[in-house]
Amino acid sequence: MGKTYKIAVMPGDGTGPEVVAEGVKVLRAASAKFGFQLDFTDFDYGGERYKRTGEVLPANAVSELSKHDAIFLGAIGHPDVKPGILEKGILLYLRFALDQYVNLRPVILYENVETPLRNKGPAEIDFVVVRENTEGLYAGAGGVLKKGTPDEVAIQESINTRKGVERCIRYAFEYTRKRNKRKKVTLCGKTNVLTFAFDLWERTFYEVAKEYPDIQTDYAHVDATCMWMVKNPEWFDVIVTDNMFGDIITDLGAMIQGGMGIAAGANINPSGVSMFEPIGGSAPKYTGKNVINPLAAIGAAQMMMDYLGEAAAAQAIEKAIRQVVSTKIKSLSAGKMGYSTTEVGDLVVAAL
Image (cartoon, rainbow, N blue to C red):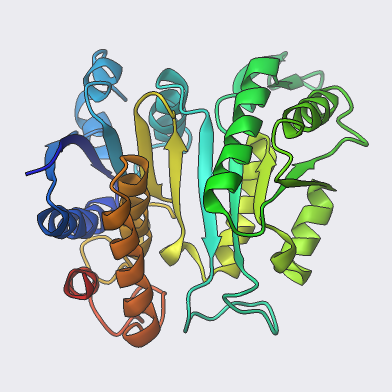
C-alpha cells in the first residue's frame, strides 16, 4: 500500500457529525481505490464538550492536532452556547495557532444546480477566492472604554504585515498558475478609503506580480467586486483579498454557486497542518434528521486529498460529486435532495 496520512477529525456541533461521517465514508472509498491509507483520530472539540467541561479547548489541543497531516472539521456552533465563544475559541484560535494563513474557497457552479444569476451557468461561475486568514480585523486588536455608558468607545484595528500580505498574495499567484485556467489574479480591496492597509496590499501585489509574467493582474474595490460577482462572474479567475472582505465575498460566492450545501473551504498552512471544512453552519434544526446535504463536506474532503498530494483521488472525488449533482440530486437544500444524508454519501461512493 501507499503512504499513510494521519487525519484529525473534528465533527463538532449540530449536523457536523452527520456530514463528516459521509466525508469519511468517501475518503475511505477513495483510499481503497487509489492505494493509500488514512488513519483517523476523533477529537470532540465543540459545544457539548464545552458544556460538559467548561473548557473550549484543552491545553494540549494544538500540540495534538499538529501531529496530524490534516484536520477534517464538520461545524462549530451550539444553540446552548453564547455566539462567539466556540467560534473564536476554536475556529479562529486554531487558524492563528496553526498559522493557517490562507482561506481557500472555490466557487464552482455544477451542472444541474440552480443559481440566482440570470443567464449564467457553470462556464461563467468558476473562480477561487484566496482570503488572508490570520490578520486584518480578525486579529483581535482593539478594545472598549467606558462600556455601557454614553461615552463608550469601541476600537477594532486591522493588522496587516508585509509578511502576512506577501505570503497570501504569493500563494494566490502560485495557485493561479497551478489552476491554469484564465490565469488572472484580481486584488480585491478598498484603496480609495482604507489608504494605509490597502496601500500595503496594492504595492505588494504589483511587486509580487513582476515574478509571474505569465499571469494577468487586475484590481477591484470590494463593492465593485460584489457587483461583478453578480453581473459578470466570468471575469474572475482567482481573487485575493484580506480577512474581512474575504469573509464577506465568499458567502456571496456560496449563494451564486447554489448555496451552503455545496460550498467547501480550506484553511491552509502550506508547510504545516491545514484544516478542511464545509463553510455552512451547524444547522442545529436539522440535527439527527438525516436530511442535511453532505456534499460540501465531501467537497472539503476532496480539497484535502488535493492538498495531501493525492491528485488522482481528488479528481475522482470531484468527478463523482459532479456526476451525483448532475444526475441524481433534486435540490441542494436540506430535506429536498430526494435522498437522505447517508444516501447521498452512498451515491458519491458508488460514483467513485
